[in-house]
Image (cartoon, rainbow, N blue to C red; front, side, top):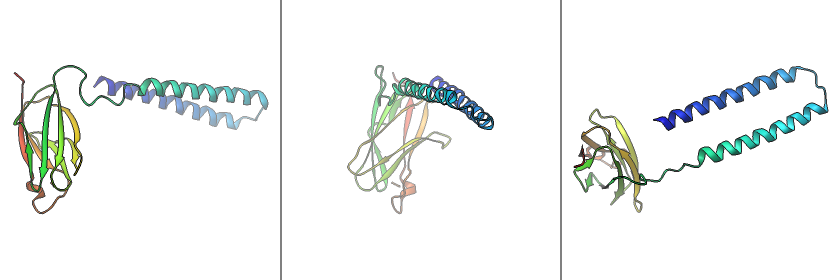
Length: 171
Ligand code: CUA
């Protein structure tokens, strides 16, 4: 994920810069105060920091939030409806390697829509809440059978509230 690692590097660099300022501030506080000139430097320094902060925030936050679906290219929509105690899904196969948008609904109480891979690792989840359609987007990278589970306790057969679908290359 190049964006994430880029953000990580920027965060680490900025943390190092902040740490550097802290260390120099601690060092400076040990020296005797020489008065007004240093205060002017400090004021300018704070304004400069403020400007850098505003610019960095504006530039780094502009691409967010991402659109729910890729602006172009194929995508698929899957409607899932939870009810005590089953998941209904409107397609058995979803395409590999393209954004898949899941619309999660419920006909009764709140359920937790979760999708597990073939090794029972949770890939993503969202709530299915009365009166709402919650969207979650995922790009499947591995073909195979995926399992839908319920992530929110919803009664006696909560644990049995499962279903599955297949991920396969689109043709
Ligand atoms: Cu539905 Cu737990």
